[in-house]
Amino acid sequence: LNQACLAHQAFSQQSQRFPRRSSPSSMALAEAQATTSVALRLIEWASRFQKVVQAGEIAGERLFHPECQWRDLVLLTWNIQTFEGCGSVSSALEEARPNVGELVLAPLDDAKAIVGEDWTSADGQVISGWFSVQTAAARGVARVALSPDGEGFDRCSGLFTSMTELIGHEEIIGFRRPLGHELHAVHGRSKPAKVKDHPYVLIIGGGQSGLMLAARLKHLQVPTLVVEKLARPGDSWRRRYSSLHLHDVIWLCDMPYMPFPDHFPVYLSKDQYADWLDLYAEAMGLDFQGSTEVLKASYDPSSQQWSVQLQQEGCQIEILKPAHVVLATGNAGRPKTPTFVGMDNFLGKVLHSSQFPGCSVNAPDWQGQRCVVVGSNTSAHDISQDLWEHGSEVTMLQRSPGCVIKTGRMRELAAAGGYSEEARKKGVTIAACDLRGAATPYGLRIPDCKAWVERIKVDDAEFYAQLDDAGWRQTFGEDETGLYMMFLRTFRGYYFDIGASQLVADRKIKLQSGTSIAEVKPRSVVLDNGHELPCDVLVLATGYQNMSELVERLISPEVAQAIGPCWGLGSGVAGDEGPWEGELRNMWKPTAQPGLWFQGGNISLCRFHSLHLALQLKAKYEKIFDLAPAECSNF
Image (cartoon, rainbow, N blue to C red; front, side, top):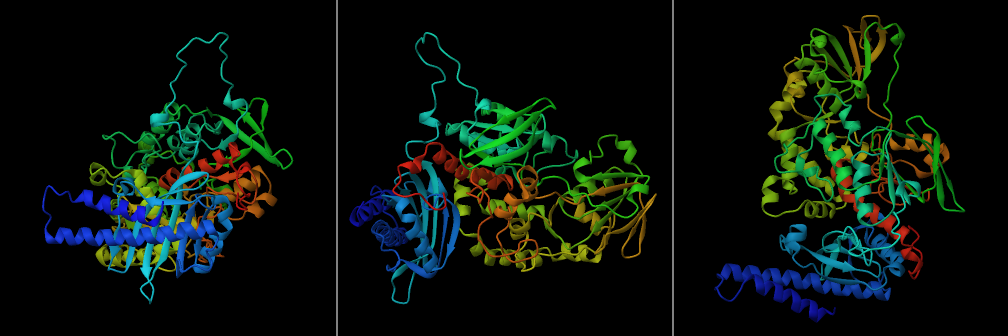
């Protein structure tokens, strides 16, 4: 495509939006002309970008703003990376260029339907638009944001690129769906080989994270086996406390290829979600092996294969030799269970939150029980509320400041991103919302996060004043960026209020803040602030080990150390030590250990990035880079 063709295409598209059968008002005509002008400027920049990348003249070209940021999701770098500053962006493009091959950018057809927005202009300065992208190996999309420099020359201030499919290896869905069976007789027809005997990819963890990736790989025809310690995919949810519900709205929680029915509630119960996971695995035809524990895994560089020891239902040990292992156990590994002086002498019950059955089980037994809950994040609040609702006397121990947000505020945020019934009725797809939301690098989201925090401080001032009066220690993060950055940085420290916070404010749930347990006596706990609390039940809502601990236990401490942290941005705050990386560390992308990958996070991130991880694994399976001009250093 040359510049003239692109310009003509854009003008034709704009003309179709204002057909000649009706005379548009002068305002509409001016708007159309302005939109066409924006489109032409973006197309002109895309044409220059396309030429210089292929010519290898990136560093010397006036393409990028000095503070430009480029986020690439596999399309050009075969990695998930963000590059900050003109020099970094130019160098990264230069390094990726040999693997890109022929590069073609064209205005994204029907961008409004695909990503929910078209050519846009903000304050007449920053303009942006979406393009389809094709390289030698893949197709994808790009979002380009331009701003004029001091000489009025358009330079890129933000670039986003994301792979959507591999050329010649597209998903077998829609028009490519399989027939199901051959339409002629075959003498001596043989059964297909069982995937479980020779998987190319072994996914450890059969909850939502593992199932979403397995479904992607199924549609890409990559032999994949999912193994899960529990019997069924939904059992990890089914075993949690009875009052548990998803705290994200249903539109954020769809899984690939199979959206929830319209009659499902806004907030699913844990049992509804557990049943859905069982159904999903069956409907997707996934190779799932439950009641299977992974004992040990080791990698052989010479054969480029793993040796993974499995034991199903305590029977004989089985060894599989996949090329790739994906840890999809989520960000919650083994329970963290602290010990306190005197615990052995305690005459009551001690439960980790993962063992708490919920009060609907033997409800009368909880009446009048004196319960102390150690912790103050989501599980601690949910359990405290459940205990209070069933007649227990509850004291929650807040050991460190936490971030409480009204659930209604989170629903507003989701709706602003297009995750709502209203957006769905307008034809906005979850895929469009995911793409549009991912287009902004994490570092550039910080100002908006801070502005949102300042707004809710004002709008919900009375709510926070009541909590403060009750002794609650509220934080919006070290740099006041709020809950979302806390999630990305540490995956902890917050709670979406569904009633427990009001119980704290009303003193119905008692609160001890800035303290923990110094000693446990037979019928009480002594806090390090000197208070002694009568106690019949001690609930430890103290969290879980991270994925690094799992690597250390299953593979080796050396591999865990080589890989480094599995989550966090490297923002330099407590729990997310630097250096700054700008992407979630080691998630959905190559790691320091060949053949080892991670799939985790919340439901929406797992849904979106499962595609990027699946595409990388498919490229490995098909040996796509055997035909590439040069091996990508990241791949």
